[in-house]
Length: 247
Image (tube, rainbow, N blue to C red; front, side, top):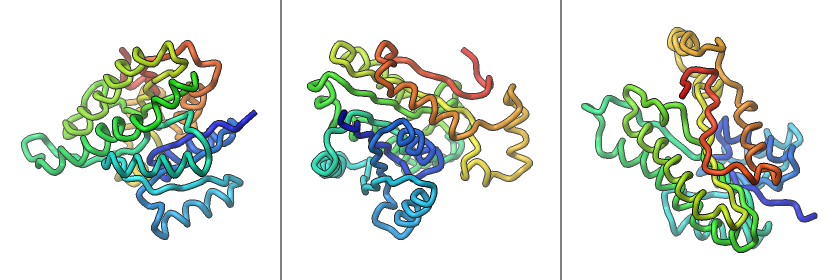
């Protein structure tokens, strides 16, 4: 059987790396995309992964640029075959209260976190439908479900991701393509662990299970949704937040 190709945007980030590793463990050919691909940090990331037994491909892709995404996917599919699994994981934060939020802070986050989902998915979805199999998983956030003080831009973008999921899922369901959202809560990535300890403790105090999530726990849910056996699940938003937000 031909190895299915999975693309993970933002794949060199903390959560993206865990997802790449879990997909590889599930037998997928993994291509990570990240803006650091052509920088020394990109080679360092590849080396670190290889030291753990993972031989990933790393491609440069500006997810905010539609034409750049088209070119990147053309190269990926020419080198490795059709993309049948897509994980939209790229994202940034530019936090600030709405009163002080600049137009640049708003548009940077909307462009990277939401426009990117169109820019990326557009180039693989028709091929998935034509072949009769595809899995799209959009990584949203707890704060896209409940909102968050100082994150009007981020919360709007992450909420919009699931609106996109629900609409596209209806268009692709009869063609063997599922589209789902995963909404993590606070996870112990490098970014979260860099938060001052006293702030982190306040966050943990609000999580009923009493701890941060593990990147591997989010990655395992992504692997479940991309399996062939998950074909009856589409348009769903899977909350993984330790009980911090229940609805």
